[in-house]
Image (cartoon, rainbow, N blue to C red; front, side):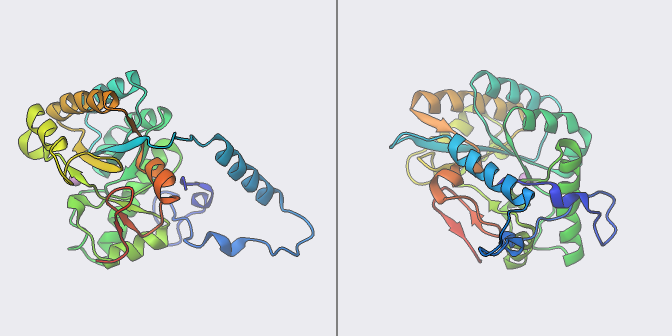
Length: 275
Ligand code: NI
């Protein structure tokens, strides 16, 4: 389900500055019929890649607890590098929903995320409420950030998280068209509000459905020092508790058979196709 940049090499018809272009939603459209007597090299390559992906995909033992850490609004100049250092030490991958204005300032941090196996999602260009913008603004907010991501790492975002978690059916339909799944969260640490390590940990580890449990998607923001402090301890506690920490696409690959474009996920099993 990862983004392929092949279609993005074509220039956008509507005259964008960069080459970012959505993958068509219906990938089966170009598939050859079974009666075809030969296999196009590109098709053979794509099938070989799929087989290789299936063979090399990580298998988790029955009963493995999974959770996905997600970080929004960054990258932050000092906070994100420190977080990346600590995740690397622990061999943990996370999902970063970057804001275009910050991503444009720190493309090397995006390159580092990508190189170290983290997943980059888009949190759009300027963090506007996407339910309150015009159609034209919506397209521009999504496309500008995707172009910045592609320019930095050579491929577009894997997922979209709307600013503030705000979405409507227009956004879902647009993401479906772009081939982008959406992800919000099941655990809200409210780190932006408390800016306090202990409060962030208390929110994450609260009892009940709002706390971390198997299949959770955890929301944090990698632009606060207190969040990085809390995230490091959270990772250590979760690992000690037997969790495997994975990216959102990996969580959905294992638990949901992959992420579907235009679908808003809250956890491994909770999602919405309309509001
Ligand atoms: Ni945000």
